[in-house]
Image 1 (spheres, helix red, strand yellow):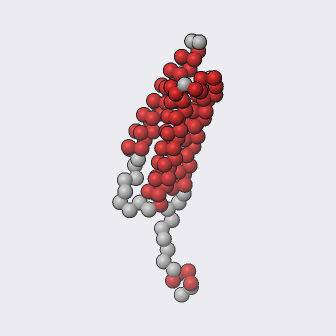
Image 2: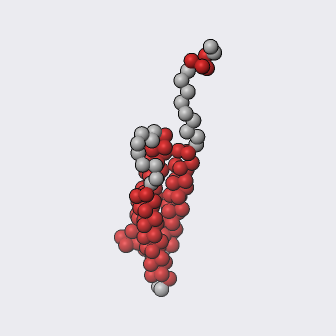
Image 3: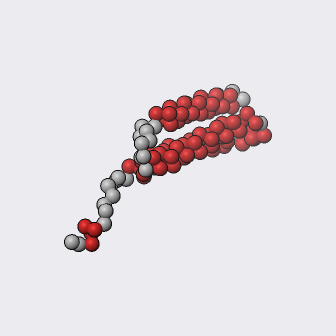
Length: 114
């Protein structure tokens, strides 16, 4: 018997956890960039709290996407009866990004009128 036969082998889970985490993290980067662009659009209006709402929303959505990435990576590493399809997370991400797009559109339209 060789030493390799004596060790119990764990099933190879592949790189699914890493790919999932990377995908969610890559989704958060453009959201943060959108918030930065909203701030840079009109730097003189930074004193108005309404102008900071877009950047604050973008930061909150981006942080939520990073949190989802960490959670999904943990789920794939140790599935333990957890649901593998992230229905709620995908719905949240879609609605949050849609709200951010609408807020950015309104912000750009109101600053273009000036």
